[in-house]
Length: 289
Image 1: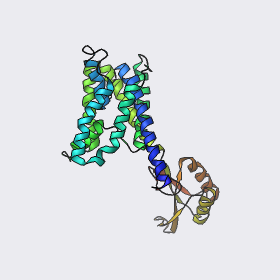
Image 2: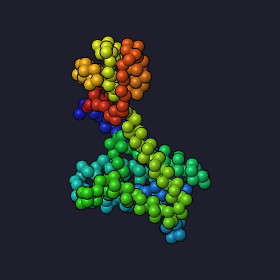
Image 3: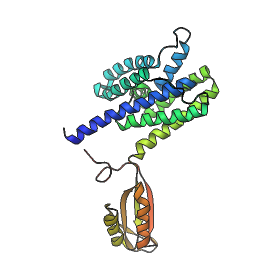
Image 4: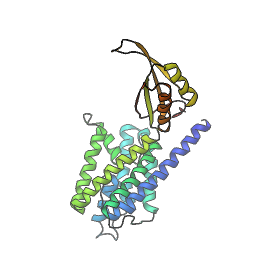
């Protein structure tokens, strides 16, 4: 194993540990404290804690319910899909349950449900994003959905997850009231947006198609001033019938403004078409190990 791969291996585990710590912070100190059920096994854990509050002082701890629900799921996943299917989720689940057990509880948002939905959604979204960037999961409803999808191929994993989480939120509505359920929906939306932005934001680039009468000059400044590669694509103007060379290149978000300025300086009449490139593998972007 090379030094780079070892470094990435440790970085993955660091991301999972820190990410699950943030997830536990959101679950313990925001959602549980305000009665917001946002789906997932953490949502079930909050409901179980509430239901058992009169039987056990303080109710069943969140970490205990979380790990109890995941244990049979992990064994089932191991049996159906093999150990490789569960090994990454195992680290995330142990880390999350440990954080839930040892982390102090602060009522971050107080009694303000809007602040709870916003703070909890952002914190949980960042935590989930970090776990996914570390190539891990925490088991829960995403693993359950993957196992169910094996026998219900006409549904996607995302659709099954949405159905399961939706049921949990509905139960939370009957337990804590419709107002909290509506705020929980806000939190769920923020969790999705923040986690997606974190995952895509670190890999986000811009791809450009430049239609110009001076392709050689434009390509040269891209390669010399931006230190980026450029590819010439043969094209034809359907109105003019002229053969043209279209310059294609990919730059990061910070470079796109500079690129447009350089093109404008060379050819003010050039067409510059910019679109998002969700992920770019290669030199200068995401290096291949």
